[in-house]
Structure formats: C-alpha cells, structure tokens
Image (cartoon, rainbow, N blue to C red; front, side, top):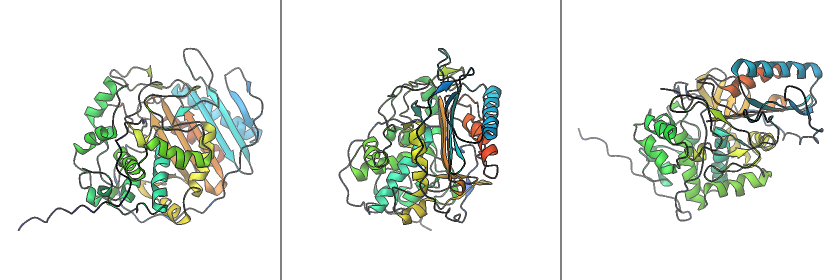
Length: 430
C-alpha cells in the first residue's frame, strides 16, 4: 500500500514583507523542564476575573539595618513581617543565596517590599529595590501577549499552522500557534541539545540568531504528535517571536515596546540587543561553566533565548505587569479567556495556558538563566501579587526562586503555596 501524501502547507496570510531575522537577545532558564511530558487533558475552568491591582503607595524613606536588609515599605502586620524575615533569611543561609528581593502586595492586608543580601559579593554592595534584572522565561508572557494581540487584530488565528508564517519547520503544517503558546507542539527543546550547551559553556558571549537556535532543535525528531502532550520547549517561543516579526514587519524588541511595554508604562522593561544591561543592576552568579566553578554571568550574551527569555525588567515594572497579564488588560475578554484555559502539566496543582502558568492558584511565570532567577505571579482569590528576584542560579538542579517563593507563600497564603518541581537547569550535566 502506498504511503499517505505529506500534508500540504497552508497558504500564507497577507502581511507585510518579511524583514531580516533579528539576532536579538534572550536569556532564560526553564519552567518545569524536568517534568515528563504530560498527556493532553480537558481544559481547566477559567479563573475568576479580578480587578486591576491598586497602585502602590508612595515609598517610605529607605533605611539600612546591620544585615543589609533594605526596608522600603512594610505594611503587613508585624508578626507576619517577622515570620517572613526569618523564613527568607533562613532560606538564604541554608542555600548560600547571595541576594534576594521580595515584593508582596496584598489587597486589604498590606505590602512587604524588602531586599536581603548583596548585589555584588566582591564589594558587598547591598541589594536594592530599583535594580534592573534579567527575568528569563517571564519574557514568554510578553511574547505570547503580543501574539494574542495579533489574534484580536484579525492578523492571525490561534489555530493557524506555524507554516503559514515561518518556513522550514518540520511538521509545521500540523503545528498550530495555539499549540506553540501552550507548550504542546512536541518540538524538541533546543536548550537540551548537548552541542548547544557545549557552545554556550565554551563561549558565553556568542551571538546566536533565532534560526541557529531552531537548527539545534530541528536536528532532533519531534518528541510527540502535536497536541497530545505537554512539554516545556523554548523552541515554541522562538517560533512565536519569528511569527511576530513576520506578521508585524517590526523587530521583536520594537514591537514589544510599542504594543506591550509602552501601553502599560513599563518604562524599565525591554528586550535589549546583545548583552546590553542597563545600570544599576546586581551581579549574577552561576555555575554554568565548563568545570562547574562559580562565576559571574552578568554580562553574558543572552541571545540564546531571544523571544523565550531575554527581557530585562525591574521589581516595580513586574508589580505592574502581572495583574495586567492576569486580568487581560491588553486583550479582548474572549482572547484572554482562551489564554487562561490552563491544562495539566502532569504535576498536581500545576497547569499551563497560553504562555502563562497556574501554580496552586498563582498565575504568572517563573524565569531562570545563568545568574538570575525570577517569579512574577498573581493570586486572584486574594488580589495578591508576588515578585521574587534572585541574583544567582547556582542551585545545581534546584531553584532558589522557588525556595524563596515557597517560604513566602507558605506564610501569607498557606492554601496557595508556590511550589514547583526542581527544573533541569541549563548547565547541569545530562
């Protein structure tokens, strides 16, 4: 019997002519990359709509205490503050975490915005709340938002095949935009390719283009049929970045600035070029080196993750962003509803929608890359926003940000504890 013919690629939609691929920048580690692929499951109910988080009140004068804690605002009750201080300090001491910033804003209960430890181990400069930081995979929330805006504008549809917008994707005629955003494409994650990892270790200043990243992914067969399982893959978001450039005719960084950052006045958030990193920022520490030794990764070129993780932001911008992400401020209600229909990833209490995770009720994303870890999440049930920033990923298979996030939420929202399995970090031996 003759084999079935290959699917015919769908015709492309009219859109501006393709510009050159932008080499851009990106850096991230991964959300749940160590979790086995989860089978497809019925979509979870849509979380209840929530009002926008209130704007933070004016900050109190900054003062220092002997252990280099910077107190910016402390409106939670004193007993809760004492418990949080002790839990975060204990977590840092146990794991030798250099520096942490925690922002917690809870409607009706108060705020807790505090830094611990140092931004620079050599100079002893303390962490501060106004530092820029690399946010890794939290970038995905911006990229997918921009894709969903194209859906609202009628430029694309979620069930379009990626082959309509990006050439030479293996099986691209059978992989939809929706599946890419939901991490259900089956495409191999290029950040697990040994040749890629060796190239990064050998030359952390190397500039990767998006197409080079895809080449690492496409050297491997797909892990499963599209739509049948969940598996985290940075390859998905690289393809969505190329789709955005193709359809908009703009470089990705400029498009995000115009359509996502500026409308929300996220003036300190960017998708920078090369290794650019605005001042002031903390030094980032990593063991992602050829011999596993600890080193600074502050100025490393994050082009290896581009649309999947290169963004830079600040505590206050992430505080503003996460409620807007969760309540769909930049999207129509219908499109936001599709984003928020999360599906199980195979871990109890954890599910994933379109570029957004739900972790025991908290909605948002985490991000990890050499030198930095981030959590940016919102809990609609209590109108609470949590941002955790750490200037190290030297946890060797664990997650400093999860350790801190779990310690904080176990105290303030014990029925909704941020807890993720330890990811397979970039830099670990496979």
